[in-house]
Image 1 (cartoon, rainbow, N blue to C red):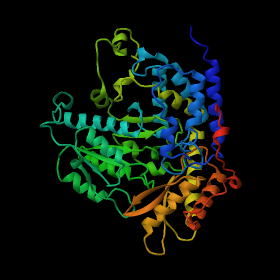
Image 2: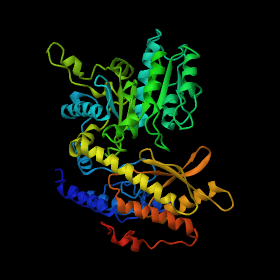
Image 3: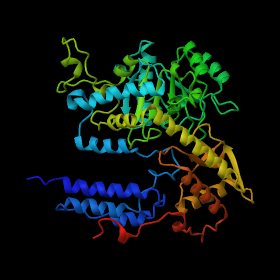
Image 4: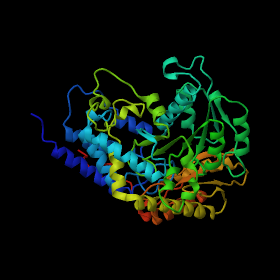
Length: 497
């Protein structure tokens, strides 16, 4: 007889609640090193099972000092959001329901939730109503999907069925960028067999955006099938390419325009930053992430394609044992349900639209716009505050939520000094920033995208950088208690036997 799961789930919920409550005061950096984590977690394979409650208690205990505080409001490294409450709760239900979100027949309710949520997202992000959509693990899979649709249409327009004939002997598809594209675009090009040799930079202007004159020359140089990749929120500076002008140039030459809007497309939700996306709706495909600025749990990415037939023809699949919605609706006069596997590169997957549905309902358009605006304000305060510290050079002030600074060394080795300061900040544990290379210089990247970030968190982060500029890296120890930041001792962790 199965055990009543309520004790286990109640205890797990208590652990989760304690973790969330501690985000405001726990150090952001992990306290355990690799060796300690391997020693703690590296048990022998069990021959006999362990009690469920003990498994969860010990899992919480053994991972407590090995978790990065990226869900909290003092994390400013990569573009990582935290789960807003409704999305987190809905994600728990998603796992509980355990629906395979591959087809309507596998889970009718979650299929309709995806259908509804995709339409909401197009409206929120200002994308064409006729566009198709898919829910993916993140922008990487979304790029793969969008560029597969682009490859399909560009080659079909030239009489080549790439899904049947493959790429051998096909016209070569080139991909034009500003040279500042995210590495996930490069990997999508590799996985699709287009080859990185066909990934060509036309360069960027003095403002960091794609060089329109160079783009026009490159488009005119050949009639080869072409994808133009633009950015809505460049990963280091948050810059937005000139969408209207670039889309017009591409359309005149029959090129496909793809927009990487992993976090930048969310600027379209509110009026304050919408001007940055003028003309973005003229593109052919777009990607965005939910686990960034919408602040839903990982994994959550979105792809949108202006040409639904190209999207579906590139991704859809059929098998005799499946129950396809279009087949069951035939002759009924009812619009067929939407089978999710026709629009993303996965088959079996979790119902990842459910947390998005919950987040959008809980926040509404105004709530999402306010969250975006708050993060932009926090990013600007961070860059301004850190930039006022001695020996700091601001390289890029935020267009939206991304900024860059570097730290100047007396010996002139600014790159090494910048990396040392970043390391000190991370080990300090009060805030977390990461490094990057921009225009040949090492820099500290500042990203504000978490709904939990507030003015106090920004003040603490600026203070952490100030301490790290003056501290001896071998002897500095932050008095975390005076800052309201505490590490838990092993003995105080829940579930300690």
